[in-house]
Length: 183
Image (cartoon, rainbow, N blue to C red; front, side):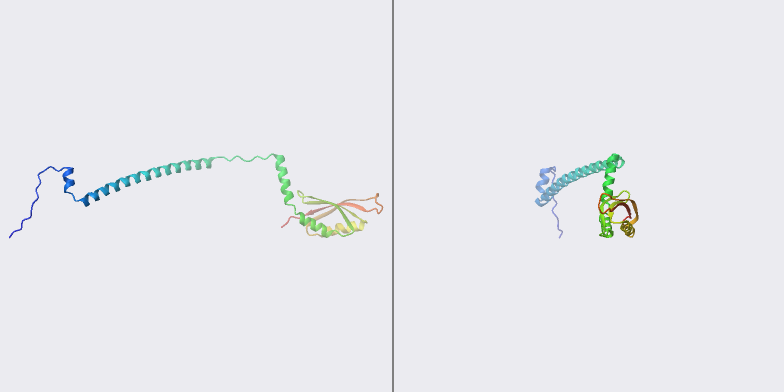
């Protein structure tokens, strides 16, 4: 016995309506889902393309700014000569080893010497001082004592005179001591 399979013959024209009627619902749902996903993918691709284009434009703009900045000449700051001298003098004052100089003078000055004034000149690294001694031997001993101070490179007695107005007639003298740079 021969089995015969049923042959389905349809001579009607195929239309969308006829296709939709014979297509199972799960296939139609799957197709609709595919169309929705395609639309979402196209929208996202367009958004990503816009962002990419915006980023490329920003990058080009930044590269142009950077290139422009590379070729830009920076104008030097011009400081008037008088102002520059004031600034340099202030820097010299700030770099003055005042505590070292003062400590060295204080340590080297004995009780029989009256220190009247000391004035540092940071530009020349020079300390000018004025003092009084009871006699010339004390004056000379003080200058020799200053010469032995490690901070000072060179110490000189500049001038001296007897103060005749004072009843004790002390010797007033001026000295200069040049200090060495701090290591």
